[in-house]
Amino acid sequence: MSFFNSQSLQDAAAMFVFLALELSLLFILISVAVAAIQHKLPAGKVQSLLSNKKGSGYLSAAAIGSVTPFCSCSTIPMLGGLLRAGAGFGPTMTFLFVSPLLNPIIVGLLWLTFGWKVTLVYAAATLFISLVAGYLLDRLGFGRYVKQTTPKASACRTAKPVETKTSCCAPKPVEIKASCCAPKPAQQSQPVKAAMPWRQLWREALGQFRTVFPYLMLGVAIGAFTYGFVPSEWIAAHTGSDNPLAIPLAAVVGIPLYLRVETLIPMASMFALKGMGLGALMALIIGGAGASLTELILLKALFRKQILIAFLLVIIGTAISAGYLFTALAPWLA
Image (cartoon, rainbow, N blue to C red; front, side):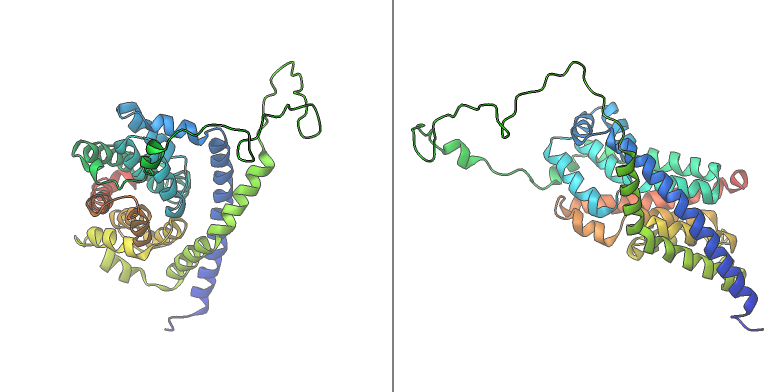
């Protein structure tokens, strides 16, 4: 019996087309919805919400992180801005954990692929651990390991006041008359409510889709190949629920793979059909989406190694604990 037979090829091709169309449409619709939310949520509002170091600050951080489908290249600069603006360390860390694990893209893909029960347990587990981890890291004093990102102001304090004289450097004030350069203020009878720029939001969503399209198609291709050609017995024997090491191995393997969630979930859906245990699947998704070597390198510009180690342990711990939770709840989730 040939491994690459025509029936396997047809099954793989049909699955590729189905997943590609379904996931692409879902990604674009979710991206438009998230862009609309972010349009109503300016950066200053985000900083003020996360500045609260009490319980509401943690909940705000989780809520904001759950509507920001950022990759590490955009999360880290925003994280630096929040720290410079005086946001609480604990809420900021909660935002860092929630943003890649619980954003609308991963929730939507999980719901479509595995159903509402799996998505609900995944969301509850990752949200709970993110809140607890952010709070504990703050209480344990890990905030002292944040690198100083604010500029020194000693030169400004020692500078002497300069007398303002009429010169080229200190020109006389000029009367501003009504002209094309300085028009008279227009009288406004009523404030005009800004309309939602739907055309711009669609362009942003399509632009983001073009960015992730290669990764999405890579995951669809790997998943379709697995569905068509990899024997179910092989996957079930190595990554099934009967293998006690499948969950921690999947959690650790997901991090150096640096696979985006758009790649991971289509792969995981086909692994599930071939017999991979649900716990190992969730551990792989959390480990791969929650951390990567690239993200750790970017975080090194903001944090010292103590926080980096703690961050990595939280992601691995979340992946392993969630994996065993899914294994225990597998009869109810079926």
